[in-house]
Image (cartoon, helix red, strand yellow):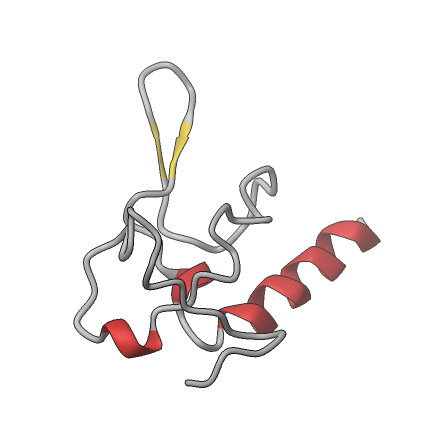
Length: 81
């Protein structure tokens, strides 16, 4: 995909890609730190550590091309509550 306001791939990042993926060309770096981290019902694949910290290592939602629309929708929902 082409870099835009919905998608950005930073292949120069020393952590790229920060998750295991099958297709690096569709890996979205726009939300490097997920805006849904503090949303309890984020819908992502996370687990809580023994210390009560949200571990989002297995979640790829922010890094998918369609992740932008999903995150904006979830943020609006959280804001309405």
